[in-house]
Length: 171
Ligand SMILES: [Zn+2]
Image 1: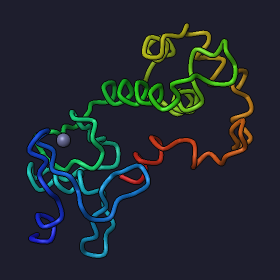
Image 2 (image 1 turned 120 degrees about the horizontal axis):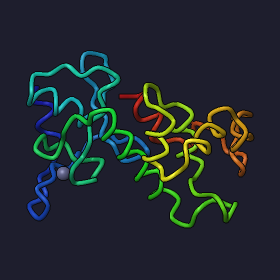
Image 3 (image 1 turned 180 degrees about the horizontal axis):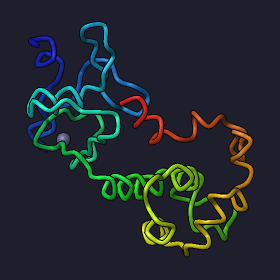
Image 4 (image 1 turned 45 degrees about the horizontal axis):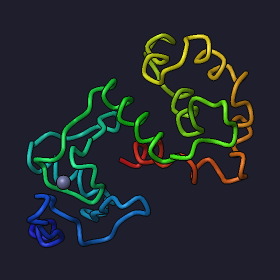
């Protein structure tokens, strides 16, 4: 695996190992190995720990630097931590809020709420600061109904507007 270690530079200020090879549009390093196009930080984590990650295992960056492959900055998020992480990042992605001034959540979060499995409505609500009823309405399509059409309000495709969900799938 010499190829891997040649592909990052160490940022002495932050301790981040910053990927210098190919990156995806979200800034995550891509690593091509054995004909497999993998996310560099996941490969780094696997190399360090000997764990083979499955698709449900989301790797979180404590440094919030997507191109960082320093295993000391990486950890497996449990389901809840993972959702909390996505929820807070969904917020960070839309700092000015959505078009509807009354919306408590944004589009990315609405999509996440639709896709969460294995959590009660109440637990999901607690995560996003919503009532279980609001969560229920979002999940049955009574709120954010236009998401059903596979479009956002600005007519972007779902793929463009849900970087976190795609990231998980890609991982
Ligand atoms: Zn880092």
